Image 1 (cartoon, rainbow, N blue to C red):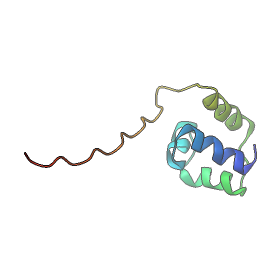
Image 2: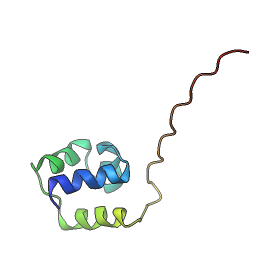
Image 3: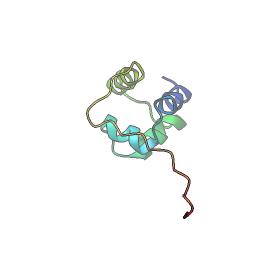
Image 4: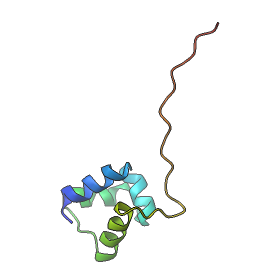
Amino acid sequence: MTPEEIRTARETLGLMQAQLAAVMGLRGAAAVSEWEKGKRTPDGRSIRLLRAYLDGYRPSDWPLQPQPPTAPTSPS
């Protein structure tokens, strides 16, 4: 996968770099950042796992998507 494909995959999954790093068992967001900048290349297992996530696989520790903020209510 190219750096752009990795970034697009992460964005498609709706994850921040730290969240993707956590579900992939990486040392932190810096590892994903290095992939996306082309400074490092993910190994074959990481690529297969990322593709499985894109195909719909979700492990039990998958991050919950944050709820959109609600507008404050004014007192009645």
